[in-house]
Length: 233
Image (cartoon, rainbow, N blue to C red):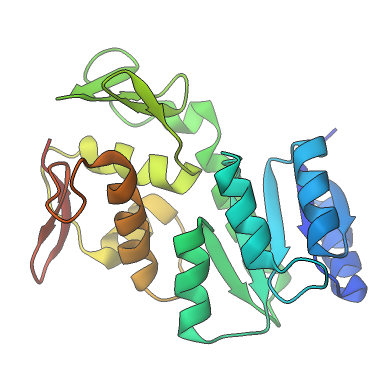
């Protein structure tokens, strides 16, 4: 059985087309047609990735995403929507979404994004980033454990999305090198990104809120004004 993907979209014709193409690629795909059903399936079926529409009956995609992250379900979430307003994208990322695709979208683009996100969960891929202490990196009171795919602070595990984990791990491994937002999209997101570089800013802000004692005066994820971001631990 292939890797499990959940499609949550009330437009059945779109779900059927996406399911058909993903099944051809070897994925195990199941569908929900409203937000409440999607949330239930996400909890019962443990998919490895969720394609989540925004405008749905019963429960919209924002609420589903928020609830999943509150329950510390950290699988990649790609938002699917016909709404292209900037505020929707920012809100989706702030709630914990990992990516955002605007309808109509091409099958090749969607498949590329799915493969990219699933690679980030592959322990072989994760192990390619150099560690400073076996499979653990220790920076002050922060420990990055590649084997467990988790980050802890003072011994307490922090709930991160896969993208947040990868961003933190990448920056920490680069010896305080500064990266522009465009460079981080290339290095961490790992594909040509058809979106706004503000996704990096939102992910950085979300990451700081989880790992920093004082997010407005960060110790670990630092900003080089006019240039980009770097790790200061």
